[in-house]
Image (cartoon, rainbow, N blue to C red; front, side, top):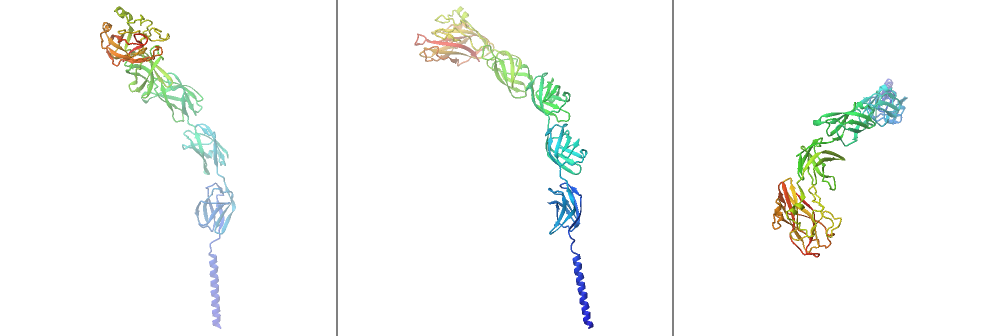
Length: 550
């Protein structure tokens, strides 16, 4: 009996130990998830919030009202550090672990973030006031707000509300985003703000002379006095020449071009701004002389002066002979280190040489063009030496003749003779036969090779005719038609027309040049032969505009 009781006692003791063991295992289960506190009690997006409680694990998710936090900084069994997510709103903080969840007893107060929406005005100069407009600006006091402009310059607001911040654009600011720092609470980056830059737009003239007034058109200039504006011109050897500012009105600075200014850029300086550099302004060139001081047509000269460009081309105007189609003849010159290189153009005579620069004509000094020759008719002299001009009609070819000092056209002869139009000009009428001739005098001023040219037409002819051109310093030798004297033949082609008035003039010149030294020479044009025509026994060649050239 005692043995049975002993076993019963052992079984009861084992059961008690088992039940106690089970009870201990239940007491060792993890604690239930719970939220005790959170700090701070409110904040912006990105604010770090520390949540205390129990039952937190790495799988625990945190919710601000209905928005899940995505940035969990750290997790411990009794605390979680998390950042306020975008989209959070005021409400309780919740934590979820699988199927378990817990919520804070108090609400987390979400503070909306500030936002910059624009600027009034949309652009401004340094020193000007601008209002930064936005929403939900933190009202911490203007003294606790800093505004950072692009260029990393800081401005202190003068006033601040929940929607506006008033600030002066600081010196050194440039165009770019503007940041607003609300103490330790938040930094907000706004859109780009345009910081205006003063600039030179244009000049009232593309070229200006020393001592003249020049207008400088400017943009984005602050409201300053003329005395606050400093203008300088380029000088020789990269020097700077200050100019006197005469006045400053809206958008226009008037200055006097200073002595010593040369072609180059204009620079304006204003306190608080970078130097303002404009385009190149040409200072009016001044022609000081020529090298050589005289030349003949076709030769190259150098126009010397000041304020010439270092390179490029320019049109150069020379005086033209009187009676021409224009008062000037032109040639294209090239700027070089020695000056303006230009060739004396055909038709140029002694007179003022001018430069055409853009729309400006810059007059220079008088330049001497050396004439290659002069000439005159020898009607009287030839007659005194026995010449009869061989004009069978008796017409004197020197009647109404005019001398032309330019060396281009000999003159005008009798009008309307032998069927010619009464309005015709510059015509020699030869009712010619063999050995008819005309002689004129030439005085060459420069030695050279010269050709003789003229206009001629041949009507009522069955064949071409030949004239001979001879040049000699001895007049008596030219009066002897049997002596050729180095005569050069010129063939005048028949027109094939019987109407003299309708026959065209053609230009003829000697194939061979005559070498003439300086001095007096005589030129003879001789009709070489008779030829049968359909109106008379002789043909009728008409000559005009006899010329000598080299």
